[in-house]
Length: 500
Image 1: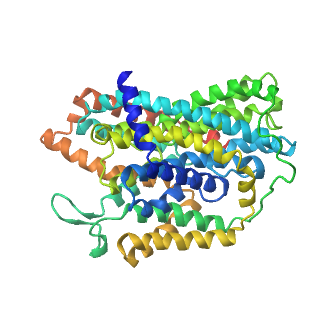
Image 2: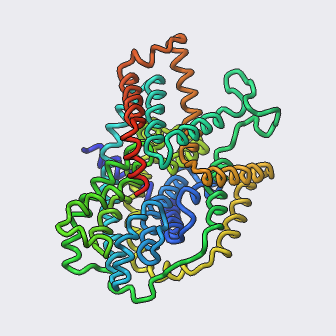
């Protein structure tokens, strides 16, 4: 316990430096902005802002990117409640009862309980990150190359099973990601792989190019075809503090949502996205009068909003302790760490304690900032909802092109980004989820490295993966999960859950 407090003291000393405070504030503001504006989610925004982080120190860069991610969870609820459009995927459930409350003149109470629930959940989840970080890192230090390889296989399997849509398509996307990660020179032999004689690909596909193309450009193109219709609530927002009855109805859903979101957020494969849906379903089942749900029940806002923020924070646990990204946003964080020369995994805590504990402490500070940013400034966010897309999207594209060009001063990077943007758009149109592709790409290089090391240590004997108990257990979980997921009755239920 003493170590925990001394580590947190170190974290606050890092996070409270003027530079990191400003970057944390910038991340929270940008996160809230993109959460409020429907159409550009945190994945696309973080992908687009990656070039900016090259000029910033690693701790500050990651604090800002983390602020964007959990800031978007706060901002997404504003749009969901006032416009009936989820600003972020995790806010989908909030539209059901949040907008109904707004139509009944209780928009302020819905926004208030959403911000307060998110703040409580964020603080609790940060405690969990701090408490579990050190023990999990110690466990991770016992991992050898074989265990890491098996852990990544299990992570990819989770990503496949929990991805939206067809399992076969998700597997296909992971393989495409793995294939793209092998493009370029082999680090050991120097042989060129999949470059087709094109020298620009000798160093491999740049992470920022792929991420910005598949998520940034593709998201903008996809949104252009949607009609611009926003049903902004016309009436008064009212008091931002819920009344006594609403508070009494909300505190248990907040506690349950926080717990559900915290647990699901740790799961690989975008478990954080499932938190709000699971919380809403549980609240509806536990309610004395379930017919109130869908007509403005405050429990339908309090639970899911707490769950989505808790999940966003705890999804940092596998990234910071094991180096395994549980979702696409965390894959982008791995990319940002790699670009800054940091090897993700347990070494982050031992070799860069300032970065690890600085990030943890910044989450508390960021949550406090978001409470201030979201409630008193709600009027400003409502005005921003009226910015037309025809002005917003060209500005985003120009900003992205300048950012991409500035990385290497190379126009080929901009052209490749445009190519991946078009490819990402077509993939989504054909029902392929791009998130598994990015996970496959990020984990591909790490998997290859650990596979080679494990093979060298075992002198080419593949049985090392099943002879080592921990590695065998991880592979067994992966096989079991795949076996369960492909059972027709389970697969059908999975489709129903995702459709709902």
